[in-house]
Every structure is written in structure tokens, then in C-alpha cells.
Image (cartoon, rainbow, N blue to C red; front, side, top):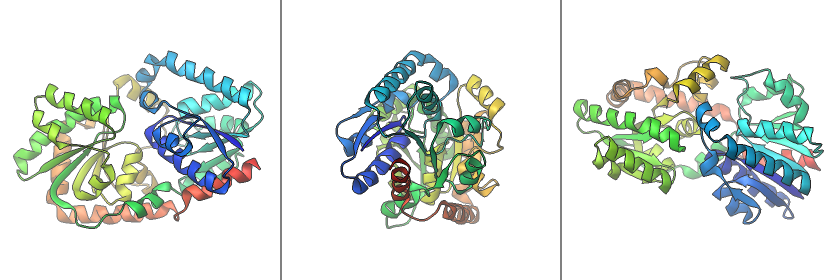
Amino acid sequence: MHLHFIAGEISGDTHAAGLIRELRLLRPDLRVTGLGGPKMQAEVREGIHDWVQKAGVVGLWEVLKMYGFFKEKMDQSVSQILKERPMAVVLVDYPGFNLRLAKALRERGYCGKLIYYISPQVWAWKKGRVKIMAKVLDLMICIFPFEQEFYEKSGLPTVFGGHPMVDRVLTLRREGNREPGLVGWFPGSRRNEVKKLLPILLGASQLLRQTVPDTRFVISAANETLAAVMQDIADQVGMPEAKGWIEVGTVYDLMQRCQVGAVASGTATLEAACLGLPYALIYQVNPLTYLAAKMVVRIERIGIVNILAKRDVVKELVQGDLYSESLAQEMQSLLTDHERRQQLEQELATVTAMLGRPGAYRRAAQAVLHSVV
């Protein structure tokens, strides 16, 4: 059995690796090729090209600057898939690339299965795209309960596999209490996110130390490359001491150690919620990118916790509302208001209970095999 995977970000690499692991347990003869990252490579050893560090950019302008790179990868992927004819192509999140790839494959005559794992959030933007997806895809495996009905209405066969974070939390739980006064900064796993957000976080650190003197800080870096970027930023803003706050690869431990935190919009906000961290969501991109997004987004909230709850559970500091003073004020409130912090922890537990039972990757693997064989 030959499956071709495409994942373009760190989170997608993680989910694809988990799915591949379960697939290989069910089908030891499985051959996997495709684009992904180091975690997929660790599962497969050969056949996966690591591109996530370069491919994981966010923002319209940032993507346009790399048009040549993405066109080359698109052409290479289409040619490889048409040449090797895998039984199925498994597209993991990363909709800007993957949905175009799916359409291109159908137009070029690919007759294998096209399976999407980790649903693109078209329920938030371009709902009309669902009709196109229903024509080119054979199966959607979603991770949020409300998505199944949304996709099935379009005629696209859909399975709710549950959210992989439910399983991950079981293995990540640590003993011990949160450390009083420890504030965690989680500026994202993309270089351009870090460059945009970290100066704001460092400015908030300076303000917080004035109002809550015992506050301590830690900055989560996804890898050594981003840690080096963070160190340069700390020097540029005149806070060389912040280089000592950076920790690499300890994100889940930090989310359980910190008393409060600020988390860049994306997968990490749900991870923080599952691990019970009282946090604020932060998001800021190029103004043109934000303006373009506002023209197509059809939801009031961007945080998945707030979307699931259908109300504001965590504070969203977005674009013009995010600056050092507003972030410092929110962190001060969470640090000093015990009742508010405790209530937020309880609300996070209620929302994350909606994500389903453990075994998400196994159910997704079973759905893939059922579709293919």
C-alpha cells in the first residue's frame, strides 16, 4: 500500500506523523512518500522531504513573496503523484497549498483517493469553497464536532475522528502546581510571527515588572532556529536579559508550569486550553494581510476555544488591539485576580471536554484504510 502525504507546517507534521504511526500499525506493508517535516521523517525514514521550516509562512504578502518556491513544489508534487500513482493522497491541514493541489490532481487525471485530514476552516472563510471540495475530495476527517454536519451538508463524506490533543494531554500531564508569578510567552512557530509578536511581548514584560515586581518570564521557542531569531530581537529592543528566558522544545511543560500566558493564534491556543493554562490569544500580521482576511472571514472570533464555546472565554488581542500596554494589562489582571483565573481554568476544561474520546489518530487511520481498500 502506497500513500502520499502533504503537510506544510509544524503542527501538520505532528498530526501526519501520528496518523502514519497508526496506519503502519494497521498495515505494516505501508509505503509513505510526500512533503512534511522531521516527525514524519522519523516515522518513515525515507520518502519524506522536509520543507516545513520554509513552507510554514503566514500572511498574504509573505506567501506572495515566495510564489516561485510554492509553484515549484506544486509542480513537483503533481508530477511525482501522477508518476507514482499512490492509492491515496492524504492532505494534512495547510489549505492554501493542499486545496490547490487537490484540484490540480483531478484536472490532470489522478484517479486515486484524495483524503483531507485536519479540516481547513472554510466554515470561517469562503464557505462557497466547500462545493469545490466536495467535487474533488473523497473523504474529510475532521477534528471538531461541529465540522461534520457542515461538510456533510455539501455532500462530502466526513468522519469526526476526535482531536489528537485529547490523547496528547494524557501523555503530557505533569505533576506539580503552577509557579506563581511565571508568565509564559508563546509567540508561534513561524519566523514572521515571532518577528511581529516578540517585541510586543518584551515590551509588556517591562511594563509588568513595574506593576507586579515579582513577575518572571519564559519564552517558548519551537526550535533552535527560532531561538536564535528571538535572541537577535532581544538585542535589537535593548533587552539582552530576555535571551535567558528562552527555552527550546519545552512548550507543553511550560504551559503547565506558567501561572498565565499569551499564546499566538493557532494550534497552540487549543493546546494551552487542554493543558489548563489561563491565557490571552494574540494575533498580528501585515496590515494588508489582515485587511484581506477581514474581507472573507465570516466569524466574530478567531480563537477555536471561543468558537467552540460560542462566546468569549479567552481574551482575544488582535491586530490593533494588541500592543504592549494592552497585553500587560490583561496579564496583570490574570495574575492578580485569583477568582477570574480560577473561573477561566474551569471554562477551559468545559470547552475542551467537547473534543471527543482518546484514540483520534487510530480512528483517522481506520477511516483512511476504509476509504482506500
